Length: 220
Image 1 (spheres, rainbow, N blue to C red):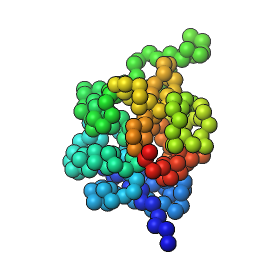
Image 2 (image 1 turned 45 degrees about the vertical axis):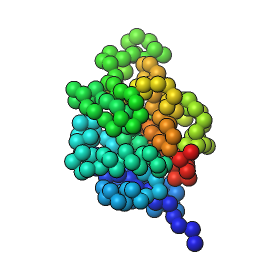
Image 3 (image 1 turned 90 degrees about the horizontal axis):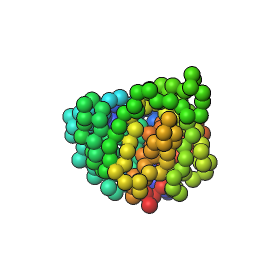
Image 4 (image 1 turned 30 degrees about the horizontal axis):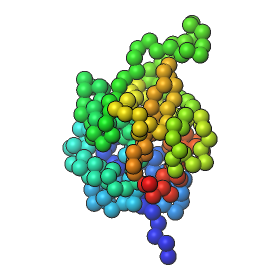
């Protein structure tokens, strides 16, 4: 009898955890998806997801308060690991949000806020102002070939809600980008880690495909 894959969605009180869990279950009904803050359950899971919405100070503060930081760093070294939205930003070294917050420093780089007065270069001047947060569907350019992009077309649209974006120290981890006035990194890949600024759980069939790819990914 085949043992089902266990996917731990880390519960640190930040984010639409159950939407993520339901989407993972829908993507692969053989997977056992658990929403948990239990360090042992996280450590024993086959795959780990770090979701998140809200502010970086609250995000890192709750991880610290719940004594989850070292567990997250450990599983990010040796298991297929998926970061989503602030869960992606938290992987960086530092965020400019909330007057500056130190992050997990798993992938070297910064998290920066969109500048005020962004303009869309593709439309005329009167209609060119872009809103912050960046909210809605946008095309994602796959920068590398990766198992999590399998069966997802190039320039597929995904759903975004964010005011901050990651700036990796080097270009090597950049797995996907989009344009919001200027090109920004929206997907990262480093060893057994993949992370997205967009929300797969809100991105219809393409998001479900990415989740299915993650559940079937061995981290290489």
